[in-house]
Image (tube, rainbow, N blue to C red):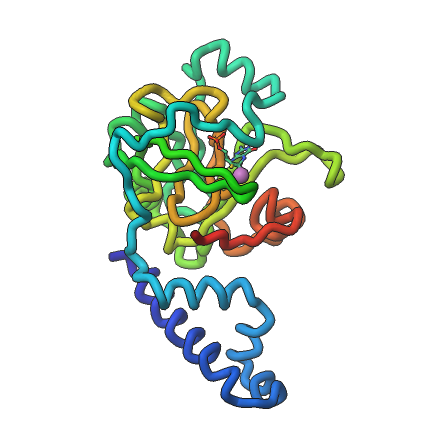
Length: 261
Ligand SMILES: Nc1nc2c(c(=O)[nH]1)N[C@H]1C(S)=C(S)[C@@H](COP(=O)(O)O)O[C@H]1N2
Ligand SMILES: [Mo]
């Protein structure tokens, strides 16, 4: 178990204790006087995450299904064919030149070919994808487990989040500037056994509409966290330098960063 887990576990318990005590104190002033509690109260989202994690074991798996449960037609959503010249060149070249670039706060930055990823520890899982828009589909996913990949690049002690940079430009009507889809998760989810970088869907290479050549599966969260068209993974200490600073393209537009289900 990585050391980070033990640290976060302690933080989790401290935070939950502060949160649980908050309503009993009656007055907000008292709560606000405790810097730890104030921190919790200022971040309701962090609180939700803590409570959820207290109620479900950290290692709990998302439900898995049988082959016969697989949806005959899995709905593609969001970007289904990135409007990006570099990406289209890769499609034309069958992704022969594609590499997954892993860097940021790591001791050993690396570029992974698809062959290298396919040779890494993998997991296959039949899971249900829940989109925030209200639909669900079940599929079988196979991919490289993110945990072993991260251990290989050696996260720096101050790395707190794993950021996924995608190939597709976000529609910039709602926000200024040319920005590409990005998402982030913390190390709880990064080291979760069902968190994989999926290259196969239903026993075939991931099709373009579902994120070829590689997409994230983070099974205990909603669909928008599952970044498709992965190009680069970056370990960071915070989100300040990314987009509008909320940790993801949809988060920058008001969605919750922690989308637990
Ligand atoms: N790069 C990228 N990843 C993305 C999206 C996107 O538009 N671009 N849409 C998200 C949303 S909202 C959902 S529900 C799922 C859809 O995945 P699917 O196309 O395989 O159904 O991808 C998520 N990941
Ligand atoms: Mo979604």
